[in-house]
Image: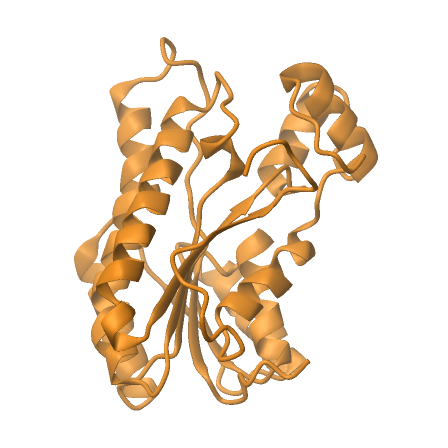
Length: 265
């Protein structure tokens, strides 16, 4: 299905690897110009080269610490100058993990979760809004997490930050409705990310095997999906691409679970 993304201008924050890159890849496959933003220049350059090979015109990697509002503004100023002062798509695919029970987490870990997971998103949306409003059409897709609906005792800070992302996104969908800018949230479930694979290996499980990974999640957390395996990053990308596209013409303020099936709504 043609998503109408040819030559659309898109920014994927956290697009250098994992679910962020999978999202950027889907946008690139449909012909969008994609800028990936993150901390590590080498990772971003490699991602931009891959996106160019896939078919993205003028793909670029731009390094910034999104917890620093000035760095974020510099990046979006560069994007505006590069692409004629307009932006069609902003995807925020970041969310620093802070692992530990409530009693174990330090103040620094709480700040890390909120600075990177919430304020980073706030900085990016704030800097992108003039470019989004200047475009003929625009979409925002923010990443939350299924843990906001199914709690884990070792993720209270991460989950609280993701719940805040969901809340702010809902508010933005109301604020930007008059501009016909759609704002939606994707909540991935147990996806075979680098972090989850690393955790599986720490408990003696082959995290690259999605079936073994889901069995480990069931054993250690009691949170299995209805499907018998963990998801893959590339299974998130198409959902993000649709929400970010012109094909999504009437869905806003939604929280879409991509979790292999669960009992929550």
